[in-house]
Amino acid sequence: MEEYSFYWWVDHISKIASIPLTLLGFGFTIWQLLKTKSAVQAAYEATLAMRRQVRRTNLATLLPQLTRIEDEIDRAVANRSVETVRSLISDWRWQAGETRIYLSASNAQEKKILRSIQASISVAADTQREIHREIHDVDSPELLVSVTDPLRKAVSRVTGELGAVAAQQVLDSGGVSDG
Amino acid sequence: MADENVDQRLVRIVKALLKKTLAGQADWEATFSRSTAEQFDYSTVSATISLSSHDKGNDDLSIVMTIKNDAGVELDRLESDPWDSLGYSRILRQLYTEARRRALDIDTTINQLVNSLENGGYDDEPPF
Image (cartoon, one colour):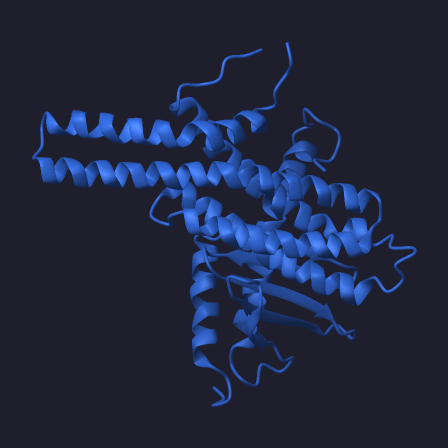
């Protein structure tokens, strides 16, 4: 049987199953709330729950893109490809910035991720400056590994923290069986 | 004596951050490190404060605090001067020292080393 990675499952669930599941969840939430609350209150709370679910689904969709950039940065550093690293850093700054839209500072777990994203964007900007300042000879960019080390750590922290949120979502949406 | 050219809000940030750091409520990250320069960052959800040192020789360690926005763009900076003529350099240096201490987890390493050496130690190797 073909093996699927964790991120494949996250991506798959996000893209295919999220909308009907969300709508189903919305209906179920209203039905549950109607038992104890007025229709208006039930609809309001169900809407909030759906918004929360949509935000989390979008986050799970962005995670594979961020992990792809992380992998490509590692590969470009290993290949000593300065120009590719530069380009990927720009991608990270844009994509990580985009991710912030779906996070809320009022949630402790998401606030932690927001701070990690901010740290990574700041380090990314500094790394671009460092590369410009330190690496003049693109044919022998030995400094690339050390210069990008803080960035790779910061990026790894973001994807790790987002991965934990995505994993929680997979569990909340019914789980994924092994094999 | 405070200088009119210094944005006093930046000095207030230094003081507030020092207080927060001393209370153990600020997470500092070591970022860039060179033989003559180091940098430590503190990030909120939408801004980053960087403290960097630059060894100018003759025991003159200059500290620069930079404020960056959510895109990592530098917005403002505060730089120490060796004579503390503007009244904030001593606090800025203290903040740098404390940030460095926390970012590098210096106390834990030194305590483990002292404990290991004084008590015969379970581990003869230095903890790094």
